[in-house]
Length: 182
Image (tube, rainbow, N blue to C red):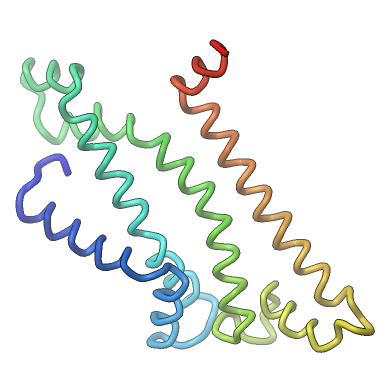
């Protein structure tokens, strides 16, 4: 995003292609190629969520590269690498951190969904999605076998979402002043 040109266009094209598919479907296709297992689930979920980070980072860089402090650094003779790593990168990190904390919730759900259908962690590795799949057979008589892993997933996702909301509030100075002014 900072330099532009054909590399930026090619990267955006790749991101657009990856965004054309739902993240879970993309992860399922990657697991079908790599095979089931916890390391492959981590790779697949990571690749499935990568386009959102790339698009957010590019948008942040495009919005910052014409700001006054970047222009001032360019005028005093800073190199492009220095401008990127000293001036632009630190200012793009807070939205990425917030997205990552919110993305952990989606990763937990995706990993549990893949394990639920048998494409994730394989026995004897304990995994909440696999526990849910096993517990559904005993739901009538031993309801707790499926209930507690489901509650653990829900609480983990809620915790990551609350963390993301808290980080967004803490790292967004404009949002803080907007709330104070109300």
